[in-house]
Length: 167
Image (cartoon, rainbow, N blue to C red; front, side, top):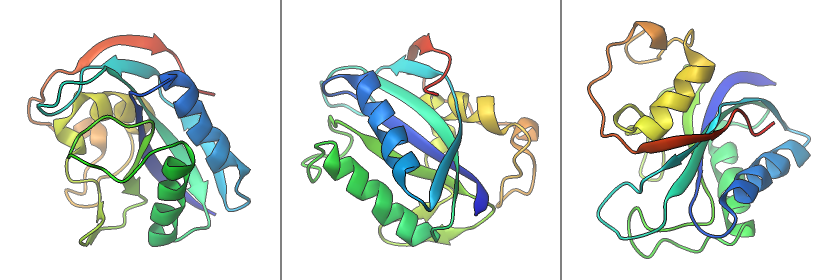
């Protein structure tokens, strides 16, 4: 198993908290993945200019024997299983959104996937829960622990903390 993989979770359609728990359950059912820890869950305002319901967001740490691209396809299959359809508009509503934030210290930039996630540090709904779990994680590009990085000011989307953990 590989460790220090951080996934961002989000949902704003249906039972948002249950949708996040479905993601954790589905990841945990795999014999090639194990959920280690979860951040708190935050209610957040939507990112972008589309009028929609608020999101619930969290970050989880997992171990996996899957390579980064197989993990990507696996989490996309979980999104579809939860009811997510092909995006009609960027940053639109969704039952479940799962993003790879970090995959160890791996760096990849492709058409469908970028690791580390290129927008994570601009979004408080990703950065805040990520820092709960990964203060000592060394960023693969800047080669510093997350606790030692001076992040640019981010847009404020967090409204409130919903609970302490999904586990």
